[in-house]
Length: 154
Image (cartoon, rainbow, N blue to C red):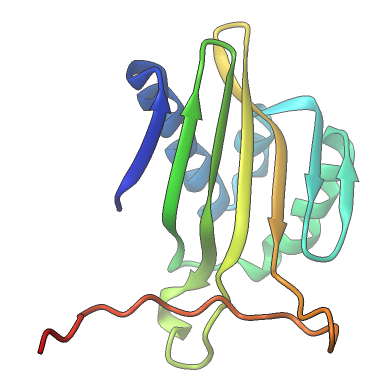
């Protein structure tokens, strides 16, 4: 996965390591590990709701964790990371899917932003935003297309 980095390269690598821990906690549904990576006043704007604070965030993960099973995978594309001494912002298209069920239905790509702040020498997620574009005329979600794997050259 190609990542465009703006800012301090060393700090960006720290943030990417933290994001890997974040991903591992999500796909293994280790909610306490996930919460340890969050600020107590985390906020989240999700496709279906808005959450404020670690307790609301925990409740949301407890509600959805039964739907996560072995074979879960997080994919990202068009990743851009801004990193400075105390703040990092990662935005991309992402999706979470079960590899075993990939043929049964396509999970949509979502627009995703993670904002991390360095607190007591650890990068913690302070804000998460997940959304899908909406067609303003119909009010329906606009699905972000898969990128072509090969390009034909004529």
